[in-house]
Image (tube, rainbow, N blue to C red; front, side):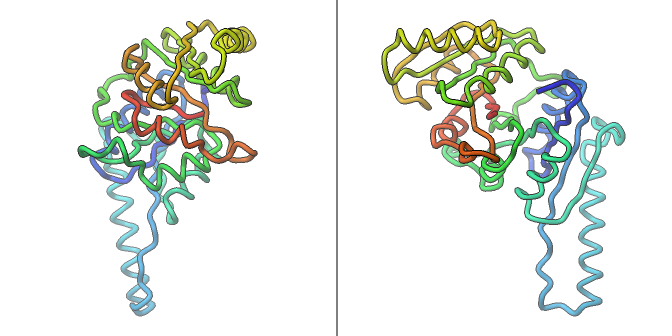
Length: 268
């Protein structure tokens, strides 16, 4: 993420929202980036209510949401410099639209709490991952993030050596440099290991990234997530593709990695 580009945090007023906003605040400070809190409010279903009464209820609902958004972490995230936006509409569509206009990164949890959270990807998050043009920082772990800073000392970047790999590694390398973190470049081999090693070393040289190479075999999501845990990675960077091109659909492996990762995932 380039310095100065904005960070967008969707706020749904759940218990997940505050830790995500605190993590985003730390990232914004590190990158000298403007921070925007966004609440997308689906319109009320007032089809069976008269016009004047419907208008009154809609105004009351909007006023209540505005007050709640303005009060959200007001002591920690003063306005300004933090921008707070309340916009009606489908949450995923609103998030993608606002991110396209103002953000270089979206920060949001994947889903809620509970013993099955690893196997669930929230529908809004899934749509944002599918449609957003910018990187998305996700994690069920955001609720455990410290209030003061996001500690990053180890970055793991996993690539499939496809067309998006250089962009993915560039983002991971810039993140590692910004935080002074160690960078490991990983590839799960489906063929000859020697050829794969030459490819990832060539990729690192191509983007001028100082990265420790790591080759492995096995099921890609499980193998990558296992490596993230073994290395105590603070963040895992993977390729997602651009919504504007042939790689617009999030690959099945990426969904699995995001669900299972022991650390936050940035999908580029």
